[in-house]
Image 1: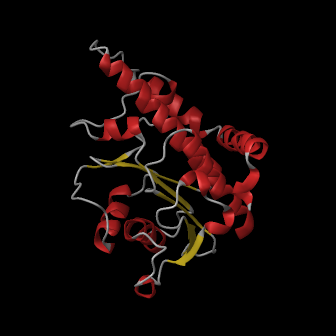
Image 2: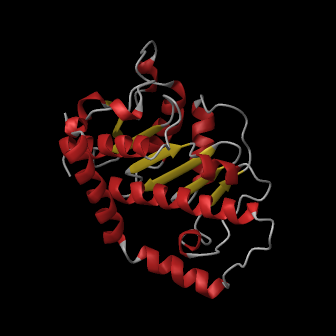
Length: 241
């Protein structure tokens, strides 16, 4: 996919998450690699609301140019610390979304943040999440970014304890659907916990089968994102500018 289409799709993802109320004021960041080696990437500028981001607003950055960013006012240090390190240390990652969505963050703040498989959405994450329980404040250093990359390990999703969530993926559409479903799963789990009744957790074999079924419908995730873009095209196509 060429850079222009990646810009359009990433801008669409920002607009969609704003519509879904999953933005965090003017914080949080998404990035997508545009070079074959994964080191050149697009990212949203500092403190721009998700609902206003256009394709042309996205910054083109190089994971090796940290020192050259000194003095730039359009690059958020916390975004560079996380996304710069992801694209530097894990160039196989093409897309990285970092959010503080309400329900996923609430679950990440529990002493036991495991997403227990109690239905289809929660089962998507059965044994498929990395967990970081070493929050030490805002991630604004290269060292902290590298630590988060290490915490992600071989997984594509990271529950960031006392912080939020990170989703990585091969495509923007898959990352969008994954983040959407993770938040929906945590919403369902939060409401189930709130009843005070014991959870009816799925058997491991059922949860594993369900997770594998999710992994077999990549086209579902792409279709979900494509439909969301069609809604944007009808309501406000300025994201593609």
